[in-house]
Image (cartoon, rainbow, N blue to C red; front, side, top):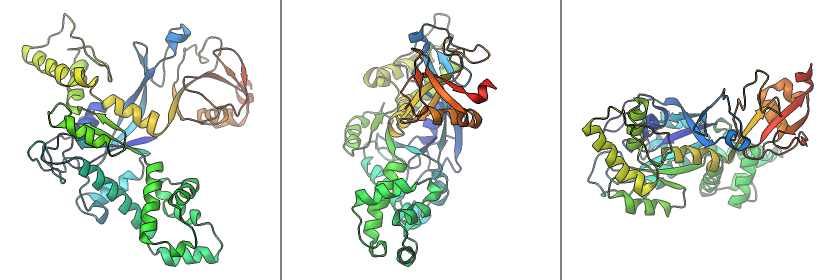
Length: 400
């Protein structure tokens, strides 16, 4: 699963990406600083089960810090999007081509209203960030409409003559975006489209692709620059769009993470505060800057919001859960004795069989049953996993 960071130029996307990954990317106050996608690894943060189980863990595929499990996830910072991108304006073609890979989107919006629709600096509060949400969602719809609608009537008539399902045609056209036939069927039903597909209008198709996009590539709003006074009212306006909206200060998160990396402060992504160790070499100027972050961001908002966006993208938008597969259910360990070695992010509704196949095809194909490591109960292969489950998979492949 991959999350894309989207938005207009100069809204703070690259700063958000750098803060989330500590990857050095160009950051400047002019449009199109990002001219090609930046890929990076960030981390989803969740409570680790080792404290609840009363054991010390030895993570392999993730990190455990002070009882918090940090699971690596893939994110991509996409070039800025401007009105007309679906027609190739700006870096639109490059943006939309890269967007195909993203499963969910974090739309970084300049919550302060200090940049216009094309990312050029303007007076703080002069621009309504709700307009940025409207234009981006329209560009996404128009992009998908161009893909679906090309020679639609002609192709739809061929589908009708062949007696094929219209959902097959829609999903086939959007297959490059990872759209399934089930999502196409659901979209057609929700859009209320009936009759012969060749008779569907451009308005019908626009409604259809909007529904499909919202299911297949859901998004949340990162209301950035929350430390600026004009952001407060704008956050309320953004929430009224109906999209999940999270107040953010990407700049503050980047400063805190860099200070923590240099061991000037103690801070974990998502913390509500930081601590300056007594032996820290923080200068008076750095201390003043840190206090400003505390007073303008952490105290009024509760966090910088960056980690909250990452967590929400995976746990809320993509509806994923964290599970812990182990080999020895009594010791919660793998064959080498590592306790709770792996934490897996899987879609809610995943079965034990599907998890086994994900771990290793042979183990999944030869799976016999599973064990709930918390209580020793045997589990069938169609057992639906729950968040924070600790499970062992018994397979003929493992016994051989």
